[in-house]
Length: 268
Length: 268
Image 1 (spheres, rainbow over the protein chains, first blue to last red):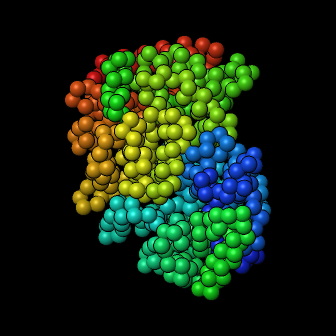
Image 2: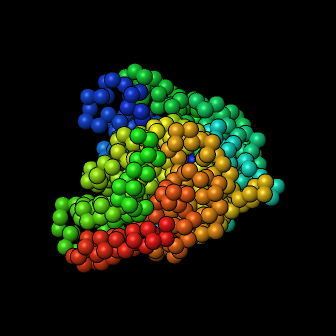
C-alpha cells in the first residue's frame, strides 16, 4: 500500500482529516501524571487512547522530544508503539542534508523509529529530499509555505515571476515518482492554499496553523481538500492536547477533537 | 566570551582552522572496537584524544547519531563530555521550525546537550533562526550555499538580480545582533566563496566539502579566511576518521589531521 493509499484509507475509515500534534510540554502536563515513570509518555498514551477513532494522523514535533535528550527518543519510540498501525504517524523534524546524511535521517525516522511519514526542508534540493521518498509506503511532506511570520523572509521571494514556494512545489511534483510526496502549507495562508491545491491537485497537504496560530479553519478545509474531499490533513496541537490542564485532560481532548473533526467535516 | 571570540581564541591557540567531522558509521568502525560497550563512543574517544591539539572544532552530524536511536543521543552526550571545553563543538542538524519549536531545538542543542554551535536551515525565516542566536556564547551557522549537487535547485535561483543564497546572507547579517552568526558555504563552490567572504567579511564560515566531496582546499582556504587569516572552519570527516580501517585508525587520523592542518596553514 502506498503512503497516499494509507492516508486515504484511514481518512475514509475514521471519516476524519484531523491530525493531533503530540507536542508535550512537560510544564503543561497535569500534575497528577508527574509521578509516573515517564509523564510525557503517559500523557501521550491517554491522549491517543481518547482520540484514536477521531483522527487520520498523529504528528510528533521532534523538537520537543529532543529537548528531553535520550529519554525523549525513548518516548518517541514508545509513543509510536501506541499508535494503531492504520493511523499515519508523522515525524515532524523538518530534516534535510546532503544525500548520505539524509539517508541516515530517513533511516532514523523510518527504520530506527517507525514513522509512516516525516516533514522535510527543501533548501538543499533534490539529493537532500529524495532519500525520504525512496519507500513508497512512507511519505514526506516538503515545506512549501509555512504558517509562521518568517515565511515572508524567503518563501515569497519572486523568481521568474513566481514566489519561491511555487518553485519548491514544481520540484516536489517532479520528485514525486512513487506517490508519497506531500506539502506543508500553513492554514494562515488561505489565498495561497487554494492556489497550491490547484497546482498540486493530487498531493496530500499537511496544514498546521489552525487554532493558536490563528488560521481560518473553514478556508483551510475548503481550499485544502482535493476534489473528493480528502488528502488535506488539518493539524491541531495545543488546542486539543491542552483543552484542559486538569485531570480530565484526556476527556477534554476527546471533546475538542470531536468538535474540530465535526467542524472540518461540515466545511468539506 | 562571545562565540566569535571563542572560535578565534582556539584557532589561535591550536593554530588551526581544521574541524573534524565525527560522523561515525558503525559499518566502518574497526572490528576491534565492536566488542566495547559503545563502539561509536569508543571510536570518537580515540579520535578526539589523537587530534584535540590539532583542531579548532569537532562537528557531529546528528543524522548518524539519530539513526542509532536512543543510544545515539547518549553517545552525543558522552562524546561532548570528551571534547576539551575550549574547542568549538558543532551540532550539525540543520534545524529550523516555527519559533516555539526552534526554541525547543535550541534548548536541546545548547542546554540538554552542550554544543557551542549548530547549523540552521534558513527556509522558514527569522523566527525559525533567531532562537539559535539568543545566547552570545553559542553560535549558529546558517546554510547559505551548500556543497551538495541539490544546491542548484533553489540556492542559485535569482531574485532581484541576485541568487537566493545572497538574500539569505543579507538576512543573516541583519539577524546577527550578538556576534554569533556564521554561514555554511561548501568548498565545492570556490568562486562563490570568495564573493561570500566579501559580503560577510567578519562572519565565521563553516566550509565542508573538501576531500571526498571534491572541493579544492587551496581556494577554500584562500577565499574563506577573513583578512587576518582566521574565521574559516575547514571541515573534513571521512578523510580523517577513516584514514585507516585497521587498529591504527587513531594514529592514522592524527597523521591525516596534521597533513590537512599543515596544508591549510600553508594556503592561509
